[in-house]
Image 1 (cartoon, rainbow, N blue to C red):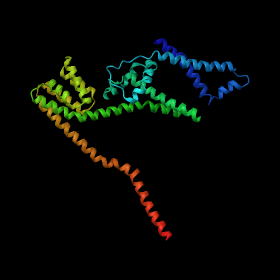
Image 2 (image 1 turned 135 degrees about the vertical axis):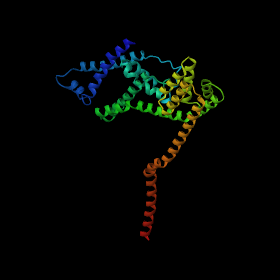
Image 3 (image 1 turned 120 degrees about the horizontal axis):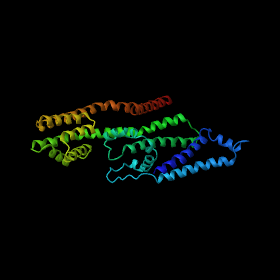
Image 4 (image 1 turned 45 degrees about the horizontal axis):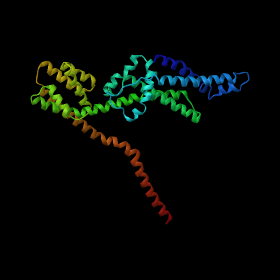
Amino acid sequence: MAMARRHWLLFFGLGVLILLFLLFFSYGGQLLQLLVTGTGQLPYVLVGLLVALTVFGATYGIASLLTAVEKQPREYLDPLPGALARIWPLVRFVDSTIVAFVPERWVYRSAPGIQRAGLNYLITPRDFLAFKILSALFALLFSLLVYFAMDVFRWEFTLLGMLLASFYPDLWLVEQSKKRQKRILKDLPVYLDFTTLMVEGGLNLTSALQVAVDKGPEGPLRNEFRIILRDLRAGMPRIEAFRHLGERVAMQELRSLVTAIIQSEERGGSLAPVLKAQAEQRREERFLRAEKAALEAPVKLLAPLVMFIFPIVFIVLAFVIYMKYVQEVAT
């Protein structure tokens, strides 16, 4: 593995640097043409050696790295989405070649975001960093295609495009986190109702959570309660298990529930009134969110009306008025 990476740094990197120098810093190959045709300049043999070194370095480096890509068993991981599954071999290639040289403290900066999005069993921080690097490389590839097709290249626009493309995985991660939080807010009153009914029926909190997990809807909240049950079966104290839930899911509503349960456990009070109050509060908040969304709908429809509907209506009315005017003038 280490030998293959050293081969890549030596051959592939040197070849690519020479190729980029000949292409861009020579402004479209003018320097290469000068080396070949200019009087007293480097002979054809040296130019051929430079090109051969570039091709050999790229070929030998890529071949060495393909054999050094680390295999990632995914039997116990979540299945990859369709688009991500298509580029996953490239992600693993970047992970094994480039991310391997990145310091660990930079690699694991994305771990909290991955945890908030609930993607711990889908991608690792190393995979996420490789995804960011791959997005920037796609932007660079697009710039190269534009250069070869239209003979237009601006390095400042290329760097800006690579920078913006590298932020696409972060935006995707934020979007996944928002979707997960919305699903948790939707399912939380249902699970609280199940748990409250079971506790009022005489079951303890662990058994009530087990019934809620068995009967509740599928989703991220169900997975979080399964993690709590697993921790409790492993011998973790109940307070610690719920405190870890509040740390994993950074939501005010769930932290309020965790705080109420921990306080009830520490004081030795009954959990049924606490869970019932939490369920009523979450249900009222869900109703308020629905009412707020309904009130915001007319405001959100205003922009499409002004941009698309009103111009079409005005064009139709203007056409009718124009046709009537033409007929009156003709008669």
